[in-house]
Length: 186
Ligand SMILES: CC(C)(COP(=O)(O)OP(=O)(O)OC[C@H]1O[C@@H](n2cnc3c(N)ncnc32)[C@H](O)[C@@H]1OP(=O)(O)O)[C@@H](O)C(=O)NCCC(=O)NCCS
Picture 1: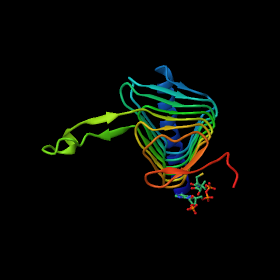
Picture 2: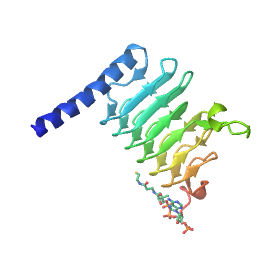
Picture 3: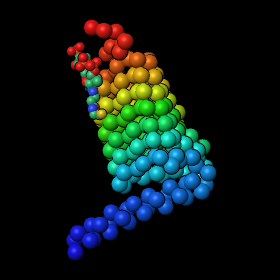
């Protein structure tokens, strides 16, 4: 009995995602037919935003893709997003980029300038994030608003990326700094 209940539960979860994908496609969002999504992936895509998901994209379980009005969220071809990631706002991720588990990529910050009012009342600022092609982002990294990551770069596990990352570089730490250039042999 428990076996059947578990099977039904899995089926229902899949159905919810299937309906979301159908609705998004019907509204003109581009989601390639070869893209795959694991259990409990959430696509919280605002109707007044643009979503593009390329061929061969894979998003593993419990990851969330989120957009707000006016945002453009683009995953290039064969982008791989591991489990429990959050990708939110105007974010472009280039072809063949790999994103490890528990990575957070959010284009927004709270405004904190007015010390006489709670932060929650001060609104937010969004700045698009641009991640190149053939980039590898290690587990638990956090990519902050406005950051551009060049093609072929590597972001080490647990890095907090606050500034642009040059192409081919390996960056790590909090805040992330360049550890080396991949093209230089030691
Ligand atoms: C960055 C990484 C790819 C190694 O790159 P590398 O260029 O081969 O680095 P090295 O191991 O030669 O280390 C170079 C320096 O960077 C430091 N470093 C390596 N990883 C680091 C990290 N995650 N954070 C901070 N510094 C790091 C090393 O301590 C070393 O410092 P030192 O020169 O002062 O001794 C690897 O450490 C890493 O973080 N991989 C991600 C793993 C992961 O998340 N896997 C799951 C997702 S697929």
